[in-house]
Image (tube, rainbow, N blue to C red; front, side):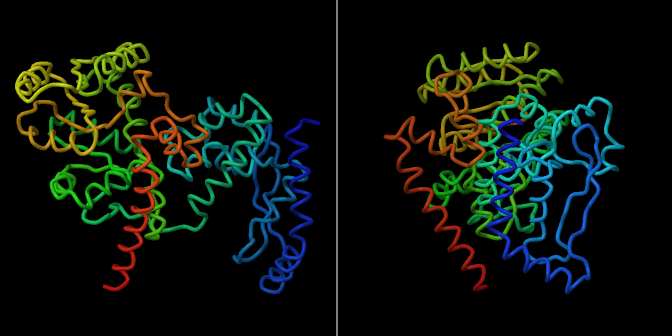
Length: 407
């Protein structure tokens, strides 16, 4: 017997015992209301073996608790690929049938990332990559991260508005894939656009900085960045579709640019950093065209030369990493003079892809704690942003909610 299976048996048995009074109450309630205690939905498990996913009848709290029996019996693990219905299985392409080579679970790597807005890639590929390399440590770690993700993302369906409103700034509530499609469409149509990313720190600045707030209000698209936006949405009883941050968008944008043949210009960062970032992306995507690079330290007198360099490169997309709000103010000032079709401010992104600053591991991002990694790396620069800024942001969101209730 494997350690993960032993973990499943012990934990599910323990929970069945501890929750037995509530389970008995819920069973009686189900029978009293529906004349049925437990219902089952057909699923296909490991090697397409059929089983029934168990639920209590009725819609009251605790409906899903009989799944503990599925875990104890071995139909499901705590963590594994999603158990598909027969109809879903019948529609699978042949290249995805390897899904059934892995044991299904109550939670998956994909569902855990989706709770915090990080499920950017295909569900089947994400789960197969994670579970095809079995590890007891990773298995238990995913279970713990799923619990934290449940607390952060909640389990109650909430409205998903197309636009999220934070004190006058309109943020597009979208997915990573749709955001990339939108950027590519603007490039194809040669329709100029200014794109901005905002996290709680950006919104705190916009709260008091009128010029920066006006730039965000006039931008063609503002995209949500960070777990703080997710939590802010929860306070407003709204659901965030995805954490569409620039750091995760950048390699996906490079991949598409390499495939479709449009070029990028990288502007910003410390001396040497942007060069390393460009080299790293071209090494990863050999067909990627970097039309030009320019470090972010130049004088006012050199701006005309920098603008000429950008425009003469014929780049389709300009990425500017000066930091907030300088990059957005700079782009707004020169937007009409710049020839790239899409311009966007991307903060300290080049630092990550140049290797100057290591990014937080995925497991830390999955529990919404990437900010703590940044704080540990640069406490002198980041303490105010996170230790004061994060609570201040949540307070301002709470005030916005209260004001909305009073209207």
